[in-house]
Length: 82
Ligand SMILES: [Zn+2]
Image (cartoon, rainbow, N blue to C red; front, top):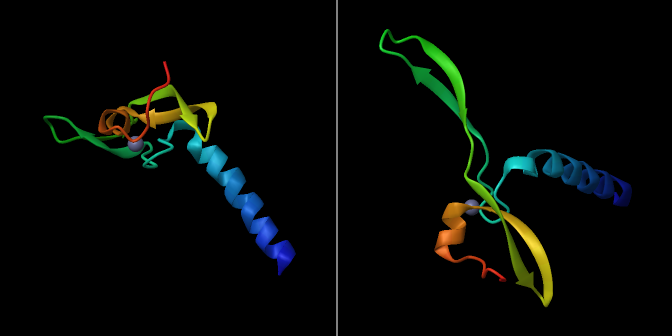
């Protein structure tokens, strides 16, 4: 039981790290996919990447860098440390 939960935790951590590369740490927004449709209605796969910025902030007295989307930054979910 204990080992199982530990394995799940490690797996989630690993997968999370894999997917967190281009993902907002506040809202979890990541890369979206869809089609570009031309005038002749040909479909071509494409992706939309979130507009991410790395911002220094202070959490519990320690300065850390958070990767978040500009929408979360604009909404004031974190306070920028200058
Ligand atoms: Zn966000």
